[in-house]
Image 1 (tube, one colour):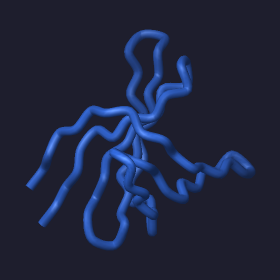
Image 2: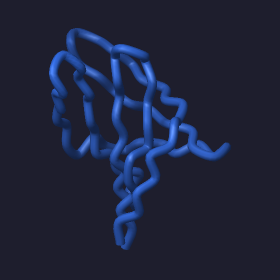
Image 3: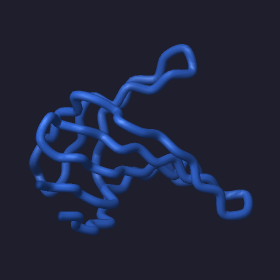
Length: 81
């Protein structure tokens, strides 16, 4: 089942050598540890860019996005079984 969320989240991310590692994110007061980034894509709307990630915590898949213009992360969707 896919649930649309579209809420701001806090993210602990590590940038190194043009690579990104998302360690965990906080949504509604709960911390979700990331085991794997399963997919990455970019969306462009004119000059605005949004970077999107599909993450796995070993159970569910979370789609999150990052908008560099305002440095905000969003939880977009959750895929559960």
